[in-house]
Length: 489
Ligand code: FCB
Image 1: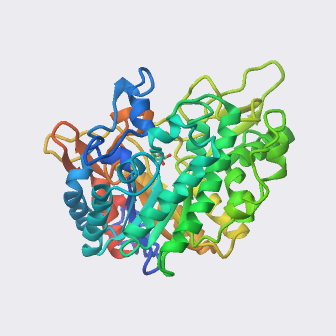
Image 2: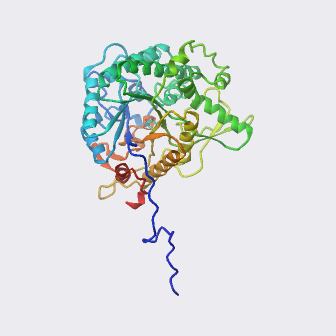
Image 3: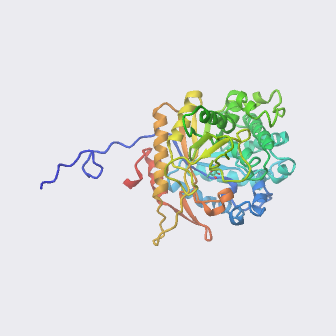
């Protein structure tokens, strides 16, 4: 029987015309991200004091197998090697965070030169490799001394944060041009003070709401402080883990659950930061807990500072429902269990696993959530450039017999999410860059070292770095600005 003619559209036909891969705009930043406590180690060197995460890690039962960031991946000593890795991978940007207790150990007064010099050297190394440094001022490592004085639920912490921002801005402003005030203040406020699964481990819904406000205020005050010390060319931002929400069913009750979580998960920050006001429905939903008297008259204006771009961190969508009378709400929100809820005023909202394939965090892989967030923001804030400041996946990567680390799932995850970013660009969203979480396998908070998110594998006992196959694929995308499929390599 004669063979049928080759199908010109079949992907198995080597002669088939292939569509050109999606192309990203010239100058699009191709980055990877880390944070100080997750990678630096050296927690007691050169004058650094304890942060709330050092304390939390020492508290029995809080972190998987008592792991801590004490050594982490030793980035404090190995940053030169790590910058070389980034350069080899063709990255054009690196998002790192500054450790507050390393540069201002007590949270008061002048900065510590040793600490500031570390970030100066890191920035210099990046610049000489042609990599844009993007500095985040707060990625969850509050100096313990400030927590002991009350932490984020207290207004003074916002004021301390602005002072710290000013001193870091002054020290690094000649070499760092891209700044982010806070990373994911939702996690700081609601996982730190609400459900208690993150440091400092408090479980008080009112403290969580107070913390959210003082993080907002800290952001606004820090932006003003930075504008005062940075050159006019500096670009300022904040990174939010916005929840891409879906109702479990189209019912009105489930759509109201979406509204409620949108208020306490997203608009609690977007409202004051981008519009200068807290959403009325959030105040109403939480009125039985607090009258929000901790918000002073001038605060919303202080928080509402012009931003140069907004950072969006996205991993998985959030599916919610209203809970029937008498039933216990489903709690699969992907935020790590805990008996207390991180959702003040939303006690009757149920959280459900999104459909589809899962990463080893148990998070569903669904890039449409990223497209949804980027295009919604582009519609609501058309003049605000966007950056995807975190996106990535944990899988159980192990080196093979030949020493290589093959992680096709991660490459597929990032490819699918970059395709979603490209669709958002085509649909008019002004997205300027993408940062894979993470450059290196590292300390994944309450999961310790049990979850590997890196493009680069780290063998913890020897600290050997091995770029995974996803890193080699991502390098090709970064070098060409073209979204080649991972399997073509
Ligand atoms: C984000 C954090 C980051 C990392 C990833 C997996 O919420 O900002 O530090 O833990 O999740």
